[in-house]
Every structure is written in C-alpha cells, then in structure tokens.
Image (tube, rainbow, N blue to C red; front, side):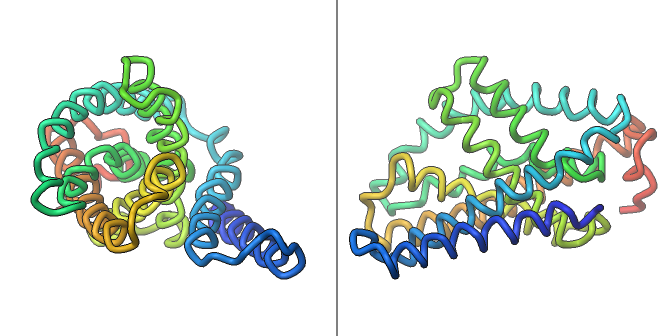
Length: 244
C-alpha cells in the first residue's frame, strides 16, 4: 500500500506521454514536442501520486489531520507575506533572468515539513494543497491557480517520499522532495504564464527553483521541525525519536 502512490504516479505519467506520442504519430495536426511531453509527465506524476495516496488519508490519526491542517494554515498565511518578498526582489530579474526564483522555494515548505513530521502517505500533497487553499482564502495574488500549484508541488514531493516507501526522511530526501516541488512549480507556471520564454531563461529558472526548493523547503523545513521536536512539541510523532 505504501508504494501505491508511486505506482499510480508512474502509470499516469506513462499513460499521458503515450497518448501524446500516439497523437503525434497519427494525428497530423499534433506535433511531438519534448517540452510538452515533459510537462505531461510531471502533471501525470503529481496527479497519479495524489490519487494513489488518497486511500491512505482515511487511516490518518485525528492528530495527524489536525497538525497537517494547522501547518497548512500557518504556512498559507506566510505564503501571502512571502509574495511581498517576491515583489521586492523583482529588480533581480534585471541583473540575471531567473535569479529571483532562488526565493521561490519557500512556497514548497509545507510539502516537506508535514511529511517529515507525520511520516504517512499523502502528507505532502495534503499539506501543500491546504496551504495553497489558505493562501487563496487570505487573498493570495494568483487566485485559484494557487490550488493547481499546490497540488502539483505537493504531488511531486509526494513522489519522492513514495519512492523511498515512506521510510526515509533524512536531509537529502527532504531536499530532493523540495527540489521536485520546484520542478512541479515551473511546469504549472510554464503552462499558465511562461510558455513564451526562451529555453535559456526557463533553464535558469529551473535550476534556481531546484536549488531554492532544496534549501528553503528541504533544509529550512527540517530545521524548523527539528526545533519544534527539541522543544518537545512533537512528542506524539515518530520523528520525536530522531537524534539529529
């Protein structure tokens, strides 16, 4: 059951890419584009992970759900504030396209800190999507598109945890989950706003988001949770047994 999310993620991604490939082969008005194929693969991974982890949510403890919801609410409000930091950093784009994306990773932190604490399937998707919902309800800049971003970012982080069988929550795994969320974020932004950018700019943005996701979501998320653990606030969770 623990690998259900991973199986669904891989199957959905493969199915979408296969359908696109067949359409390009047999439908003269559809041309194969590796970027579009990559976009479909990422969307398939996120959607499949979300669907595959759905049954696991029913087996959460009430405490797990409460903590995930509270984390989502707190970070959703912080995400609104982070939008002001994002706006203030706009001059960085004039210096180097994509430089501002080094700040983007904070928007993925719920997808890392919740599974690190709860350590159950579905935590990354649930927390990140709920955080996006809280951000939207608090007046987030990007309206309902935030829910799409939250689902895909959380879904991509979920794939990483699912790939370990939900057994590894060390720093490299958390940083990889944050980076995966960064990839998901750029796919959504590419579909909605950035499809007219050059490949060079998109590549720079991707590298920046991978780094930012690893640091601001992975490393920072672990640091925050470890601080709460040392303060005794997480004694009811398995992560309380960590010695780091």
